[in-house]
Each structure stands twice: as structure tokens, then as C-alpha cells.
Length: 323
Image (cartoon, rainbow, N blue to C red; front, top):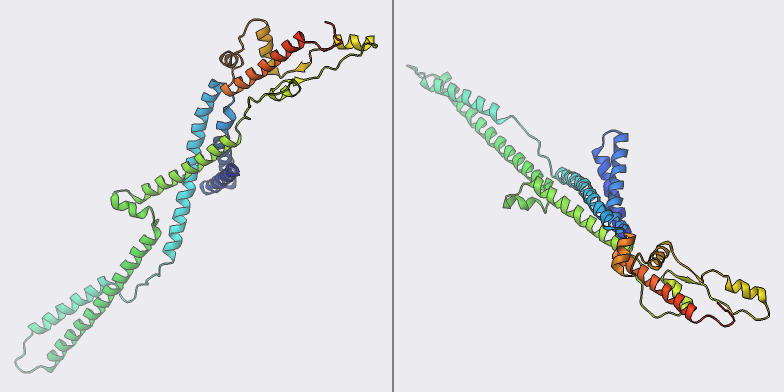
């Protein structure tokens, strides 16, 4: 259950990653197909290569490393893209401050012009009282005051905009990887490492779960009767006594084939042992068949059971049968 769930999750990640990386529909379909093949290969190769010879396992290990690296890269693409989308949604929730009034540059230009005009008005002198000059000076001073108020209001709006931009930047950053920038890591590097870590853990869980789920059957050493020794790979056909009155039955029983059938591997080993080409040891059997240690042990037990059964039948034939 765990292995299947992990594989389905990884396949879904590869599908979404392929759709995010492709442009045209055909490109997306090919990216998705490649990702699914790599995921299944990365999850099942360790379990499928375990019963085979060492050379096959070595080649499978190289292919498996490549599949895991490519799969982790695809998963990292999905994690980074989804993190960016989540950041954009968080940033969109921050209120937007729209600029109001004139820009500070235009206000500063008007203020400079008003200051220059007021300076020229103050420089003018009249021999007699000049009401017009006094009025001009008063108007320019009032205009400077109004420009100062407008400039302060524009500065306040600018500060609000800066705070809104900073809030959007904070909301867009990942709440976990964002603080890593305080220790010298860039946000992009922290996001990449986090995505690769998630992908690697997921692949490790899936591979290990499939390795346990597809493990070979365990052979026990429990004592068995000759009629049930076929569970170790040797099928025993019981020999029935021949009644004396029937000569045909006697002849059929004496000419019957060997009372057992063995699998191909066990038969090959039995023939090699009988010909003196092989010793019935686990090491010799493993080298002869090119199989794993576990498989060689199972074959050895089956061979020993078959040899013991043959010896017992030859030493103690059933009553009524004359060899």
C-alpha cells in the first residue's frame, strides 16, 4: 500500500512537471511520458534486479542512479513552480496602494520656481509703499506653504507604497526558506535545495517500499514428509503398490519414469552433479547458474531433497516392485 501510494504520488508530480515544462501539447505529452517512465523505472529497478547476477545488478544500479537523478530534477521543477505560484497568490492578497496627487519631482520643480519668484520679489525695492509688491510676496509665501503641504502628503503616499512593496516581497517569499537568507543563502538556492530534498525523500520511500513488497519468498527448514517435499521446488509423485495378479500393472510400474519432476534450474544442477561437473554447494550453484545467493540456496535445498528422495526410493523400493 505504501509503495503504490508513493509511486502514484511521484507519477502525479511527474505529470504536472511535464505539463509545466512543455509549450506545445505534443511537447507536454512527451515530457509527461518521459517522466512517468523514469519514475516507474526508479521505483522498480532495485527490486527487479535483485534476483539476477552481479553484472545485471551493476548495470541496473547505473541506470537506477540516472533515473533517480532525472526524477528528482523533474520533481524539483514542480516544487519550485508551485512555490512561485503560492508566493504570487500571497502577494496578490496584500492591498495595493495607488499613487495620489502629483509626483514629488513635479512638486519640487514648482517649489523651486516659487522660491525663485519670492526671492526676486523680496529683492525689489519701492520708494513709496507698494501694495502690489506686498501682495505678490504674500501670495508667493502662501504658495510655498501649499507646496510644502503637498510635498509632505506625496512623501507619505510614497512611504505607503514602499511598505506595500516590501509586504508583497515578504509574502511572496517562502515562509520556511525565506529566513535562510539571514545565514547567507539566497532564496532561490534555498528553494532549490528544499525541492531536491523533498524529491529525494519521496523516491527513497518508494524504492525501499517496493524493495520490501517484491522480496522473494522465504524458504523454511521445517521437516517435511516425502509426500510434501515438492514445496521446495520438487514435485513428488507417490508410488502405489502393484497387485500381484496383474502382470501388466507390474510391468507398467517397473517401467514408469522417475517419480518426480523438477524445475529447469534444479534439473540442470542435478544433471551437472550426476555428471561430476558440479558440487552441490551454494557457491558452486550460484556460479553455475549465475543467480543470487538467495536463489542458489533455494536450488541447493531442492537438489538435496531430490537426491535424498532418489536414494531412499532406490534403497527401499515399495513392496511388489522388483528392480
